Length: 129
Image (cartoon, rainbow, N blue to C red; front, top):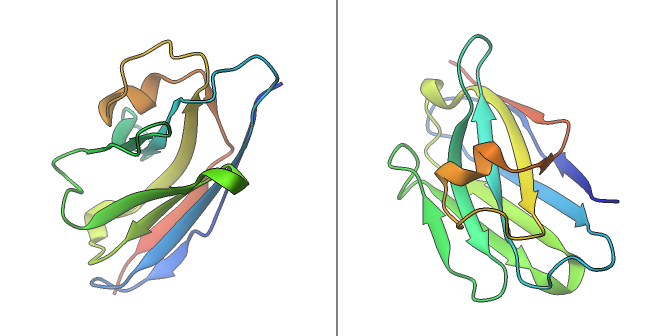
C-alpha cells in the first residue's frame, strides 16, 4: 500500500518562507527510482503541478510559476521529499499535496504530479498581509 503524508503548511506574510515535508511509504515491488513531487489546488480551480524530483538521479523540475522561488529536495534514506518555498506571494495560497508515481506511470515533470495516482491529504498554505 502506498501512503503519502504531508506536513509543514501554515500562514505567512508575502515574502515569507515555508518548508513542506512529505513522507512516502511505498509498497514492496515499487521501483526504487521514482518521480515524486508537489501539486497545489485552489477551490474551484484545477490542480497545478509545481515541482517534481526523480529520486534516482535527483533531477528536479519546476513550473514557471514557482521556478527560482521554490526548491524541491529529498532525503532518500528517510523516504522524505521537501519543498522549500521562499518569497511566497498571495497567489501561492492553496492546498499543497505531495504526490508519488512509484510505478513510473508518467514521465517525470512538474506538471505530471497533478495526475499521479498517489497523493496525501494536503496541507494548507496561506499567504496574506
